Image (cartoon, helix red, strand yellow):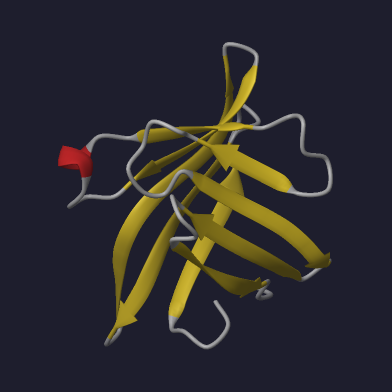
Length: 117
């Protein structure tokens, strides 16, 4: 993530789902802050996030809003924060991520694709 020592890793599994995690480097060790997935559940595209020390470790689901076509907006109006996680493609290697809740509460950041061997 631009300006931060925080990273996300995503891979496609055999079920054609995206599985990922977010982490920070603490010395030479990865400190995982959340696990993530994007998959189809009951004919809906669902973004799932599990943060170990939040929501009693429960996975929170966000459903893709199909009415928005210019970017991906995963939404869960019942969740306290965030209510929306949105991804907007800037270039093939840059994505703007917006995380928002009620009353303009939220933050955004830029993800830059890193080449790996």
